Image (tube, rainbow, N blue to C red; front, side, top):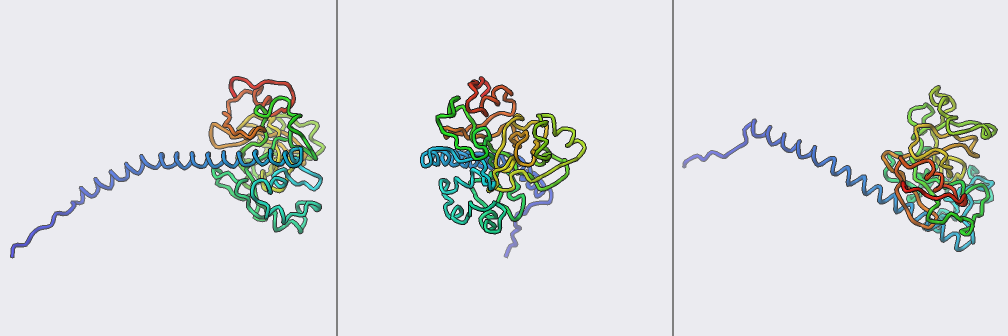
Length: 293
């Protein structure tokens, strides 16, 4: 019988094929990453939509918005749980006791998926606390507040209710203003302004990395923000004992996403003017959103 030779790849041909596959993979990876990022943004938009609709449903039931924080430090998010399909978690909470009471240990460690942004690779700041990526505007949601729709005279569609932000990373070194902030005392609030944290951050003093560590906690930079810094401002946030300070919304890219008081959701460029951003934060100042909104 005649022996037939089987065709085979030469080493050179094999190297060429591998090189072509590597080039194709290099071209595909950015596209795949873009698709994943777009899907994550969409999911976060859906989260914000569910939250602001929950706020409106809460108002329909109680004739007022939930308070941003109460005397036991519970957040607006914790009061919204029955309106965002987490009645089972809500039932575990004893609102008559503090958020850090052992009676609330089981509830406070549970993750609430709608409060987590899939774009943020950090899903937990503290192992014993369920974290959040969404902060409430403390000009509408503040200590024991009971704001009503009628009190938002600048218009529901012109007023931010909730903003998306990156969580802290638990570190206490000044590395990234998107993750760490400056923590001062309550009595420092009266002297705190937009530039207060700059030198502290530069000197690596009074640094905290627990932003958004607990969805149950309504205190400043845990459940609320005031937007005195524009989105992705290079200056660090400052919390004065959790009662107030200065803050921005933080993201990886050009935009931050916000939920408005009318239930709509929008992406805001970090280049938005101070005047327009302030107007979007204030519920009844009579100011008007600019063309950059």
